[in-house]
Length: 156
Image (cartoon, helix red, strand yellow):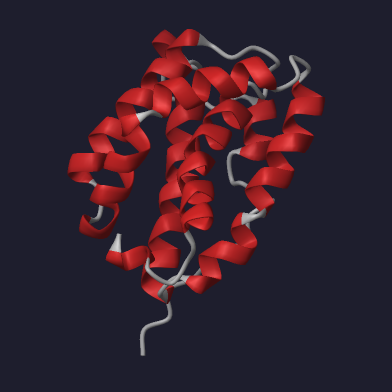
């Protein structure tokens, strides 16, 4: 958590919840949250707790600790209609624009890249050949997370 010491606990929670928001935004873009996409997102959080950038390993470990429960609760609480749901999720994800710049530039950029990569992986979970490797048209509209400002790592 030392990499995230520049932010409050509630801001850290928002960073963690962003993974669930992204999952629902992308998986539900076609108005149907596919079971495969939910399973793949859960698996991906687990994989990233081992394989991601060292700084993000503990972050994804924290995310994975209760990811399934948070995802389930959000799906229950959010509207069934994709358009309405996406407005809410977009608003929630746009809060990252105030939090990510508070982090060390390299960590903020790495986390931003991780979010967009996560979104692409979720999108590819249920489309295309044998249900893998294709992003649908409606997913393409959200997969780059247009509501979140890009953080670029600037080496000194």
